[in-house]
Image (tube, rainbow, N blue to C red):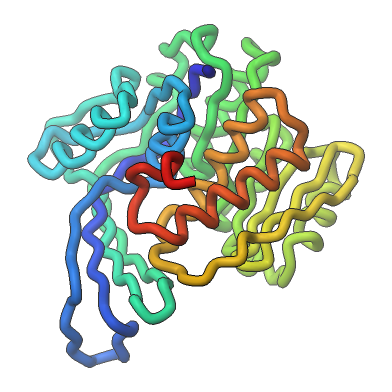
Length: 290
């Protein structure tokens, strides 16, 4: 199996499940509450670990009690954090999530008092130890330096970049990774209402490989020779929890590609795994439940 490094954040997620999402200035009773580790990069690593890979996280940890939730969960999945930096001041990023039992949609209020991982720490990592590097599309200036360093000194090492949000300047990174992983949210923020249009638009400007997820419509991909691919989403009788479905898709795609599968097969595998995630709460035993 592969050695995979992910650069991004870990969070403390406080998830309140309610019957239906509340109206403004209303009061509702919480059906259940749970506290767990979250964060896009580490979510993907938890899935990749269950798929048999050796996973490593590069991010920032704060030495405070809530960080123990993050560290305990990563340890459970044998994910190493020795490439992280640790700080005594600040707060582990915290997401307050309202999960609707009726629709399985989630709304997130995020608080952070924690600096981003930087290039100076990234360039200390021995990248020859890895088979794949995955980046969250955040902290744009520092991420650009990381990607440029990787492509200059390790051009043979494949890497992926998640583009979940339309952050200012993120388009300047598009030419650097091996594959771009777009979300529906990014497309809508750019006033594009379907995945294929987004991929065609991005593909016109440069020869890239990219994917874009679109909920229950499935996912699309574009190859470097501008061929569009599509995979249907799984038909689900019941949606339980969509938190981390996109991160699961990304993990499924990376898993297939790092094993040498073609993009069409990887797209299909990733959709199936994301569908499985939507049918259960959290990530535990995700692969065993396939």
